[in-house]
Structure formats: structure tokens, C-alpha cells
Image 1 (cartoon, rainbow, N blue to C red):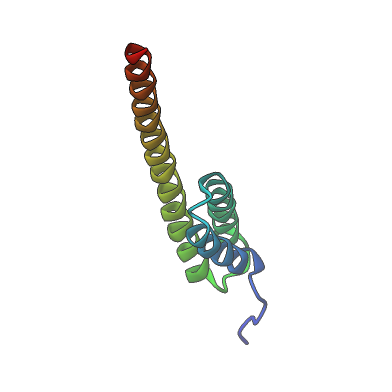
Image 2: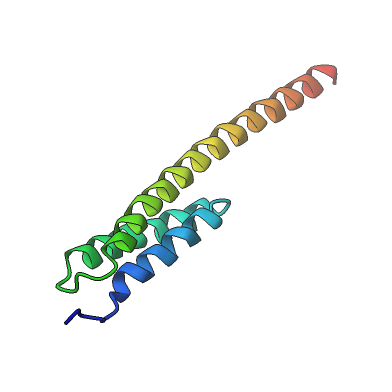
Amino acid sequence: MQDKRTNWMAIWSLILSILSILCCCLWWGSLIIGAAAVIMGIVGYRSDNPNQKDAAIAGIVIGGVGMVLAVSIAIFMILFYAGQAKESLGAIESFGSMI
């Protein structure tokens, strides 16, 4: 007889990993949710319940992609705002030289 129990850790890992991709504009939230998805996926994969191991693997992979996407967006935002600061500083300096 086949065991029909649901592996809730694997299911939640998949849900959180999809949510981490959808929330990538808020990079800090996506990073936290993606890390939680990866941890839950690992726990769900290693559990005694053999059901939904494929959902656990998908949660680990998609959660990892969400984390990489969050870090990429954070780096982009840092570089973007650093460029904006240089432009603002240049505008202030040119205004000061006019006076």
C-alpha cells in the first residue's frame, strides 16, 4: 500500500520559492523568502516522507534562482544609486563654480 501523506515542507518550499521570484523588486524580501524556501526544500527532501520530493527539489532550485536574482537586483540598485550620486555631486560642483 502506498503512503498518501503530504510532505508539507516540500510544498511550502515550492510556494515560497515562487513567491521569491515574484517579489524580486523588493530584493531584501526576496532574499529572505528564497533562503527560507531553500532551507524548507532541504528539510522536505530529507524527511522520512518520500512524497513530493520533486516539489522539494523544485523549491530548492527556484529558491536559489530567487536569491541570485535578489542579489543581482541589489547590486544593480547600488550601482545605479552610486551613479546618481556622482551626477548630483557633479551638478552641485558645477553650480558652485557658477557662483
